[in-house]
Every structure is written in structure tokens, then in C-alpha cells.
Image (cartoon, rainbow, N blue to C red; front, side):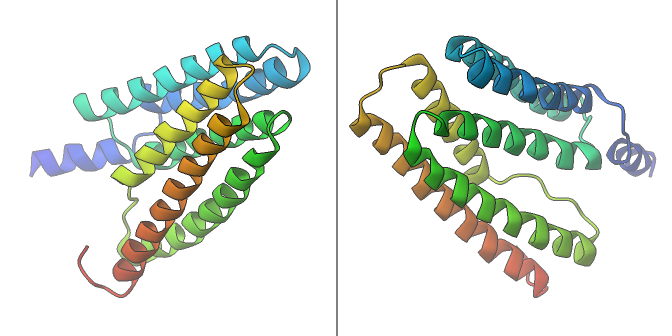
Length: 190
């Protein structure tokens, strides 16, 4: 009984180290944009993106390892991820026009996720975290951004290959989320 009470208290916590790290990542977004678009310093933007990625790993590790998973964190962490990814894709779009494909797919995917996620929360009362395929998409997006930043004169073929790989995985991920959320909304066990 005591364990269930503690678990419920953890889920409702607002101020936790993982949540503060997610908030910090949100604060880094304007700095990334400023570094890349205003200061015209892609390497600095890449370093800040790396810091953001490391704090993302740290907040996930701390949340799981020290049982600091919270409902706010389940929302704040992916929001920080998606806004960071969107900001970096928009920055990259200023030099690599094919990145627009990723921006369009991401916008559609996230719109679907917000609407279906709200419906799932309303039906189940639970906030679900990212699945394995969503984490792969996050890894690929960060990796693609990093390669485009580090390899300033990336060849169009390699750029298009990375963008295409990300696009394919994003489409697969949204398809899997559609299947999962549809089953959940129909009351099937997932």
C-alpha cells in the first residue's frame, strides 16, 4: 500500500531533477537558433545541441534510476525533444532545402500525437511515454543534425540519404503510433 502511495506522489511531482533538465533544454532552444542563424556559428549550435542531447539522456536516466518519473515529465520531456528537433530542422533548412520534408512529416506526426494522445489520456487516465521507434526517430534526427553541422560541406547524396532515412523512420513511427492509439481507443489491450 505504501509503495502505491509513493508511486502516485512521484507521478504528480512537478519539481524534479528530470523536469528541471527538460526545462533547461527548452531554454537552450533560442540559444541554438541564435548561434546557427544569427551568429552564423554552426559549430557552436552543434555544441549546444550536444549539451541538450546529453541533458536529455541524463534526465531519462535519473527519472528511471531514481524513480522520479512524473506525469509532467512524460509531457515536458517529449515537448523539449520535439521543439529542439524542430528548431534544429528549421535552422538546417536555411542551408539544406530537402530538410523541409522532415519538417512537414514532423508537423503532421506531432499534430496527430497531440490529438490522439489527449484522447488516450482522456480514455485511460494515463500519460504514456515514447516507444522504442520514437526514440529511434529522436536518435536519427539528432544524428542527422549533428552530421550536417559537423560536416559543413556535406555532399548532397549523403545529405539526402540521411534525410530520407529519417523520413522513412518517422513515417514508420507514426504508423506504429496510429496502430497503438487506435487499439487503445477501441479498448483493446496493447
